[in-house]
Length: 217
Image 1 (tube, rainbow, N blue to C red):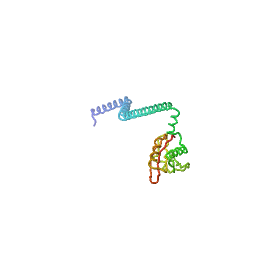
Image 2 (image 1 turned 135 degrees about the vertical axis):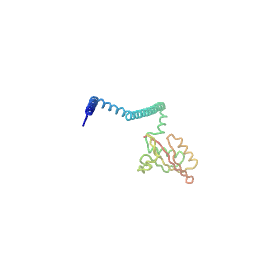
Image 3 (image 1 turned 90 degrees about the vertical axis):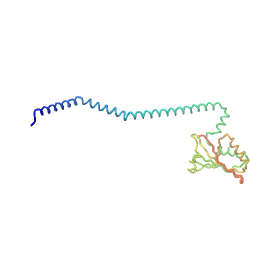
Image 4 (image 1 turned 90 degrees about the horizontal axis):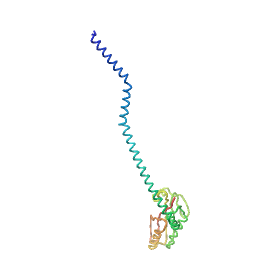
């Protein structure tokens, strides 16, 4: 049987719970706001903060790279301007020599004629000549499809804006002295000619060589 003390304790407990309930109802929105702020603060320090710093570092690094690229391009532009100024100071005769070193456009007939002249200049006979460049092979004015692996050959690659042509020549009537003179002629010729392969047969007096010539695209 419940005593008076038990009724008093139960009443006090209900009053206490009522006060707590009233407190929670009154300050619930502040408690929720506190939790939201706490989550945001923790999220910033553990998630957003490090990510933000990482992005800042990436942006800074990207800006530095762009600045370095800009300075590099600026230096290149300044050098080109200096080259143009120097070129404009040349005489017309010197400009023609420079254009001959690296012609603007490939001309098959002109190239064959020039090389044949260099051969005849040394009292030699040009037996055969062929030119490889781009996607075709040219032999004495005839054009035909070249083999794909020859087109992709590393020796045919050139810097941007420059086209390389591989010239294969077979020359008759060659001895040691005429070979020496012919190589000297090629070396001192104005047009850029790089010998990449040479095969000399004293017994048959035959010279087979491959050289590179260059043209602007």
